[in-house]
Length: 217
Image (cartoon, rainbow, N blue to C red; front, side, top):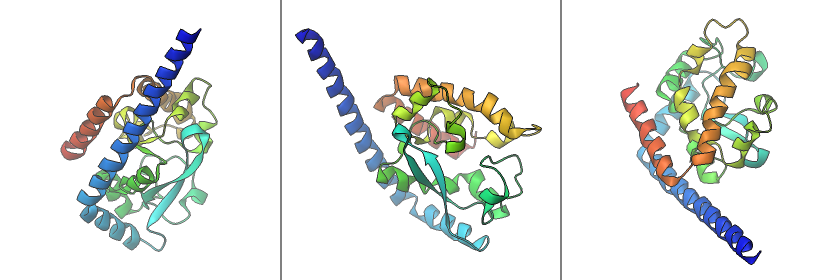
């Protein structure tokens, strides 16, 4: 029995060390990212503010680690009160998205403010896709395991579905298709990430993300 307790304590120590190292990784590279992207951050803010009357930031309700709700920051890409006009899902050629908003989404500049969430400790640089409460309620018990870790700015699910609006094109009921087809596939990728995550793999996903942003592939 003492031997078993020793193994348990050792496992907890390793897990605690991984959490600490991942947090240090997130803070360090988020600060570097904010510094290097500050001109783009300024550009994104100016474009978001100039597109129409309304706030610069869009604060999206998302479910974080442990099922805790938080506000995810993004540059606003839609008309004011877009949530009251349509659903939580952004569909193909969504009329709520402004012309400048389309540019921000295409360049991914709209997601730069996520770095604020990472620094605050609500998100990680790499992790499962942050999802809205209206969709999390459809998770199975197994799928809810993605809530054991912080959601990420990028990761396997985000990269695999970076053109999600294209996948929703032509669907008569985009909401139903997302919940029954797209979301389960994304969660499979997220669950695999949660089970196999490491700092080494996080560095790999970060480099893959940078490559995709640069090459647009």
